[in-house]
Length: 327
Image 1 (tube, one colour):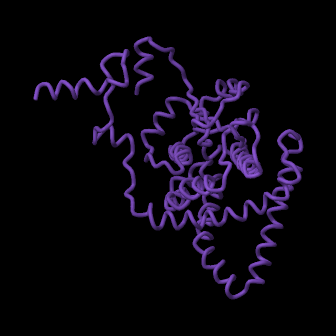
Image 2 (image 1 turned 90 degrees about the vertical axis):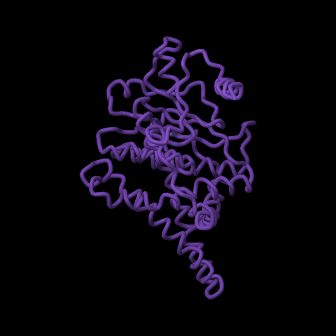
């Protein structure tokens, strides 16, 4: 849109890649860009970077430390996907994209805020070609995480966990789409879509199951909680001891290890609340129109200004003032 126009007029140098970041992400000075991989493989269209949770003052509390473990475990999943075929998507906090691929992806994007990063990766996957997303674990990018429970609740219930329920049929179609069975990366990523569908099903059953056990078999509820907690301890133990065996600088403390499974258990309540949020609020909203359709048919995207020297604060006001003067 605007940057290519400036490049055509010689106002800025042309460039092949663009870094997308949130406003709460301080880019590290030693951010590693895998230039050799990008030059050697033109099929690489995006780069995923692992993230770590922190605070602006650099003194994260226990809640932020719990999210830090969560972010690092999620990064391992992305790295595993990249080793097997390709990462499903980049993280929404920071990513690097080939600009041509980014144009194609954004034009097919439905502009829904919830899960916009996942939908970008899914749009690239739907091309069913050799396009790939790699994971660059050489650099871990910090991002400011919620440091209070109310902020964390709002982030998960109104955004992150809401994505699964808003995109339920998107996941389902990706599992049964006939074209996906003829594409290697799509086949490799199918277990992750099935996992999301299973989690959604458990969210629907979770509220009834918890209430039923609470009123009819509270001993069974306690036993089930202990079993799931034990499984979470096994999971975080494997992650800390085996996955991070060569990265001692990324390991968590003993208190973090003890508290993390209980932090994860309360996230189940977040998912149930997100289910209610989607059912009562967002399920009534119509699906957004894709950017490409808006540009080609609706024509509600502003045109490129006639010259590169533009004051964006007043560029649209002159036309309105001229129209008023003519009236």
